Every structure is written in C-alpha cells, then in structure tokens.
Amino acid sequence: MAVWIFSKTQGAEHLNLRQFFSTALACLPMVFILNIAQAQETITISGSTTVAPIASRAAEAFLVNRPEIRILVNGGGSGVGINAVGSGLAQIGMASRMITPRELSRFERSQLKAHAVGRDGVACAISASIYNAGVRALTREQIAGIYLGKIKNWSALGGPDSAIVVIDKERHRGTRHVFMNYVFGDANARTPGARLVTGSNNEERAKIAQSDAAIGMLSLAWLNDAVKGVAIQEGDARIEPSVANVRSGAYPITRDLLFVTAGEPVGAVKEFMEFIYGPKGKEIVVDSGYIPIERP
Amino acid sequence: MNVLEKRPTDPLFWFSALSAGLTLLIGLGFYVYLFWASWPLWRDHSLSFFTSTDWFPGESYGALAMIYGSVMVSTLALVTALPFALAGAVTASEFLSPRLRLVFKAAMELMAGVPGIVYGLLGAALLALWVKDWFGLIDGNTLFTAGILLGVMILPTIMTLAEDAIHSVPREFRETAASLGLPPLQAFFRVVFPQALPGIVGAVLLGLGRALGETIAVMLVIGGLDMIPSPWFDWFAPGQSIPSKLGREAAEAIGSGMHWNALLGLGCALFSGSMLLTGFGSYLLRRRQR
Image 1 (tube, rainbow over the protein chains, first blue to last red):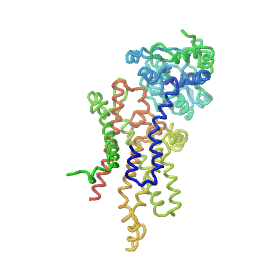
Image 2: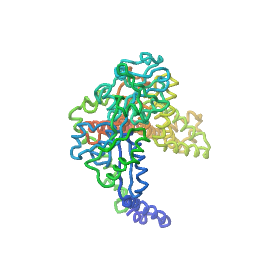
Image 3: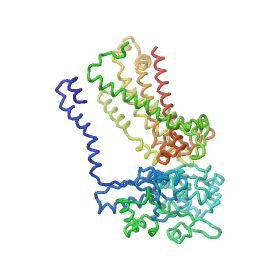
Image 4: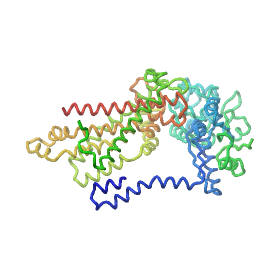
C-alpha cells in the first residue's frame, strides 16, 4: 500500500529506491517468522543469578550434541524465575530458595515442581579492607544489629573506625530470603539500617568491592579477594563459609539450588534436566562452585 | 465546518491520517489501560498512595519516596545540564564556522543517541566512586550522583535541539538588529533568543522527558532505598525514582495482584507527571505568544 501511495504522489525517478525500502520493510516480519520456524525447540530459562552459571554452562555443553535446540538463559532473581515459569513465560525457572506457599497457591494451576540440582551457602560478605583489619567473624545478633541500624560503626565489631555501608537486596531475591531467614527468622524482614539495595549477585559483589566498609549477603561461589565471607560465630564455634562446611552441614546458612518446572518436564526440557543430573552436569555444578545433589 | 483543509481524495491523506490516528489511539490506550489496570490500588489506597513513604509488597504501598526521588533527580539533572546546554548551543549557532558547527552537531547527536545503560555503567564504575571521594561520603550511590549522571545524559539532547531552534531564527533578524545599531549581545538577547524560545522550551521538555523516564542508568547509582532523606534536601542520601523502582520490581510482580496494581499506579503517576509538564510548557508558550 505504501508503495502505491508514493507512486501516485511522487515523481517516478525515486521510485525504485522507495520501492525497495518499502518492500524490505514489509518483508521484515516474515524474516522473523522464518527464523522462529527454523529453530525446532526453544527452552527459556530465567531466574536466580546464583543458579544461572549452572544453567548457562550446562546449556553450552548440552547444545554441542543438540544444535537444533535453542536455550535462552536470563537472570532476574528467584522470584522472577518462579513467576516466569508459573505464568508460562519460561520453561524452567531458577530459584535459590524454596518456593513459598504463597507462590504455590498463586500458580496452583501450573503445578510447580522443584528439582534440586545443587547446594550452596550464603556468606555474610564484607569488604576486604574490613576483613583484613581484623573482622573475621560475626554472631547472628551482630548481623541483625547491623541490618536494624543499631550497630553503625565497624569499631563496635573489632574493626576500624568507619561507618558501615549496609547493603540489602531486592526483596524477591533468593539469597535475601535465605539470609534473612537465618538472621531474623523472617525471609521478608525489614532492614531500617540499609543504605543500598542491589539486585543480582554481580551487582551486590561489585558494590561491596567498590566500598571499603560494606557488608552484604552473597553466594559462596561469588566470594573473591575483594569480597570476603566472615565466619559465623555460634557460641564458641566459629564456622567458616566454605564448601566443606556447607557439605558437612556445619555452616548454618545453606539452601538448595532449584530448577522449577510446571509439572513433570517433558521433551527437550526433560532431556536437559537429565543432562544436568548426569556426570557432565555434576561436573558443571562443581565447577560453578556448588555441591552437586543426587537426583531424588 | 469542515475540519479538514484539503479534500481527502489524495491517498497520501488517508495514509498519514491513519498513522496520526493510530498514534493518538495508542497514546490514549496506554493511559486508559494504566488507569484501568491500577484501579484496585486507587480503590483501596487512594490518597495514601501519594502521602505514604512505606512500600512493602504485600502490606503497604506508598509512592511518596519514589515521586520525591524522581522530582529531585530530574530537577538536579536539569539544573546541571541547562547552563552548559544553552551556552554550547549559543556557541555552536552564533560563533562556530559552518563546518565546525556541523562537526560539533554530529558529535552532540552521536552522544544524544548513547543508550542509558552505557551512562549507567560509567556512572556505577566511575561517578559513584568520584562522588564518594570528593564529598567524603561513606557511599557514592546517592540522589546527587543520579542527578549529575542524568544531567550529563540529557545535556547533548537539550544542546543540539536548542541549537536547532537558535540557528533557525532567520538571518534577517540578526542583520536588522545589527543595522539598527544593537551590539551583538543585545541583539541576541532581545531579538534572536525570544524568537528561539519556543524551540528551546521544547528542547528542555524533551530532555526532561528523557530524564524522567530513564531507568537503568538511575537504577545503578541511586541506591535503591524507598526513603525521603532528612532533612529532605540532603541530596547525598540514597533514594529511589519511579522508573528505577519499576525496573527492580516489575518482572517479579507481573500479575501478582496488588503489588502489580501498585507498580502500574506508579507508572500512572509518572505518565501524568510528564503530561502535566508538557502541558504546562506549552501553556507558558501560548501565553507568551499572545
């Protein structure tokens, strides 16, 4: 239609170029449709950024033998993952916490099923300069005091005289649920002492590393030289956040890493899940910094 | 009375009219949908949505902190950008040689097209740390940081559009002013500037629109706390703007009842705010021209 209008109203000398562009524009949607038709099956995975490394590495390895399948891995957080699979936006949702009863009832029709693929600990992470200045362990009460805004300076905890930059996470994040559950016994606890709110593990780690006086919560696999995990002091015991302590069950803040599907997985999703529970998948879980779990 | 000036036989008319109608319809549809979909919020909370600062999904939805953050950050951005934008526009239009002016314009337009996320990355990696060091703060993710970053971001947009407005004032105006003996400075402020003002206001409004709607750049440096600092003008405190709130919570809340309604309500507030601004801007202009 556009071509016709131009030919009626404009001189003929520019017609060819116009015609070309109009035709190209009209063909664009068709190109997309063809593209979609070509890929046989697409698995969309979204959710927890803690679980995402497992999913993307597994996808890469899985697709070597199945090039006709497409796998898309997105972040967003556990709440987003469960929401996405519950409302049919994704085939697999990643979650680093249990599905809450509220979510189960909200997505009752989708029959959410959780598949634990790994185990992980949540560290209370602090800036390296505070760690190196001598803050090596915190009790649950101390962490709670910090997040409630009652303890405001590192000097009260054996550290340097420096205000504490308290970093909280978005409320729907799995890491926050697990951490707050330990500290306050309430996954949705309010934290009046917070100074910053971050989202993904990457963002949280970057903000802690940028500051020299920060405290936050981070999956064990994300700790590095700039962001250190303090030990949890329980009575006389000082429990280091280490893979060994998570494996033995000594470390108190742990969670299962979940792949969530709507009902039992079928087709390519089922194949992918089996791949993750297989020997190569277990290797990937370990490489990502987590502890593999046997298929229940 | 016939509202159409030309007889609608030309196929070009039908095509353009269709496009115009579609645009109007989509704009209106957006607004109606936002109101309709956030209706449960207005029904249950009505005014308290605008007066409370407590936002806790599942319990309470108060938008005041986000509205405050948006106003604060956009104002800061405008105050930062406006002097530089106008000075740059005047320089480019009145003093640069035609060739240099084109180079300058091309650079501005290139910068105006840089996506927000790029500014966000630079803001999070550099500006937040600089602000922290310059002002001796415990942390650099503040309303101030977001405002400055937005100011830098909207600067090229305002500058290039304002320059267009100034440059499009016909040469005769300047020549007549000069021949009447007005010195260049006076000629500019008494003759050229008033002529260009509608265009400049339009440029500012477009820049402000970009600032109001910017999500990711603000989200990365504003701190993400739903609070109004005390005292309220303490811009070195963390805060939250409406788009950054939506960016952080939208994906999780889709279809989740009141939480979703409340986020749509925030969108409604943002939409109304920018419409009010645009309306106010064009009202001012119309009053001037009378």
